[in-house]
Amino acid sequence: MTTLVIGGGVVGLSVAYGLLKQGAQVTVIDGSDTDARASRGNFGLVWIQGKGAKAPHYAAWSRSSAKLWQGFAKDLKEATGIDIAFSQIGGVEYFTDADALAQDAAGLQGLQDHFDGDYPFEVLEHSRLKQLVPEIGPKVVGGIHSPMDGHVNPLLLLRALSVAVQQMGGRLQTGAKVTEIAGGDRAYTVTLETGERIEGNALVLAAGLGSAEYGADLGFDAPVRPQQGQVLITEKLPFFLKYPSGRIRQVNEGGVQIGASKAETGADSTDLPTLQDLARYAVDVFPLLEHVQLVRSWAALRVMSPDGLPIYQRSTKFAGAHFVTCHSGITLAAAHAGLLPDWIQDRNTAPDLSLFSESRFNV
Amino acid sequence: MFDPLEPQGTNQVQFQFEDRQLSAPQGATVASALLGAGITAFRDTPVSGAARGPFCLMGACYDCLVSINGVTVQACMTPVQDGLQVKRVGSRQVDSEGAV
View 1 (tube, rainbow over the protein chains, first blue to last red):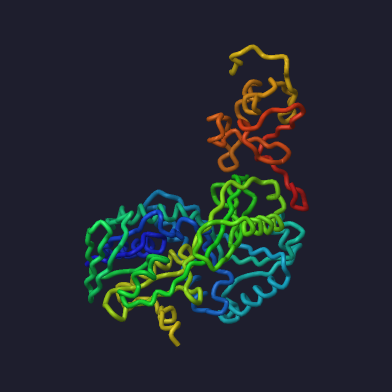
View 2 (tube, helix red, strand yellow):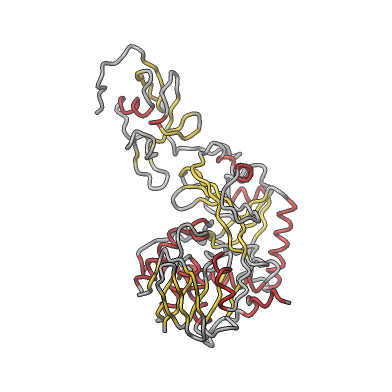
């Protein structure tokens, strides 16, 4: 019994790692460096606050992953020796707009009510936030602190997963362009551009934006679209930023990462007006960044479903084929490694993921 | 540690590194001027705190960073000038308003 995982990014490798831990045989087939690579361009947050404000099942699923993250990071360290710089001491969203703060706080309050109070967060006006984060500037009206949030070095996570999968006996085929996937009940043949054929009894389609190309042959709609995000990186600075936020965080290597632009385009190039907006916001929040040098910028493509939530779908065409996609592959990595293998192997201990099926788009 | 290969010209400029008054030949880079004054460690890294100084002297390694007018620059790519105030990076002080 071999499971073929199409896609060797954080999503595919997390699933592969989890399957291997359960004793499965796994072959991961990964594309080339010219493909869109969300796992190389993402922001590195393990983020909960605000996710699923209108979809509590998504909030709960994200949170179940966040709760598994500490153990997941520890296991990866023990298996590979790689410290992926995971920190989960909480996060803070900073607001320069009072209406935006009120709106986000209302969303979180709705979730807290839904979960009978089990959804910790605190709204802090400027002076109280300044006690927690003394570096904020006068334009910050307040913030939201939640102990549920954290961050990680996403490139080290990718590396650790890749090393772990291979150490555990998984086969990782890189630089492999898939030209055809021939499906059948518990019988899959993947043909590569080189002509090589790889066979398996089960298949997980986790190819990010590439999934759209292979979905139809396997019985999936795979409705994913690119959403561009641009990122700035500063020179390495002495550590001052204890709490990550959705838009600014200081990575373990000292650089401050500034991000979270959103554009409905598949173009992965940066543009000056967007980068200026990012920089202006960052200086508004932390004036000490004003004279700091920027050393890098890039654009990467989020993998978005129509409602922004993950899709977990078993094929209705062939037994043993599964489609997995999400925009938050880092946050959900621990759930993908720890909880998804039962679902892929059709065990009765599998989490109920029916609300994440593709059928929600066809009502 | 470092000696000039050619005799020093008469065109010297005066500059400051932290609290030290130094002189260097006109046209020298900040990096070569500091090395000439016997200063080899320009800064401590923000992450590990280890000492760092010029390694490549051609703009590639970014190890020779210094602070001039509050901006971090590569000392090896910056000409020394009369009256230049050069400071170590990594010693930013933040006041109560969050400014440097």
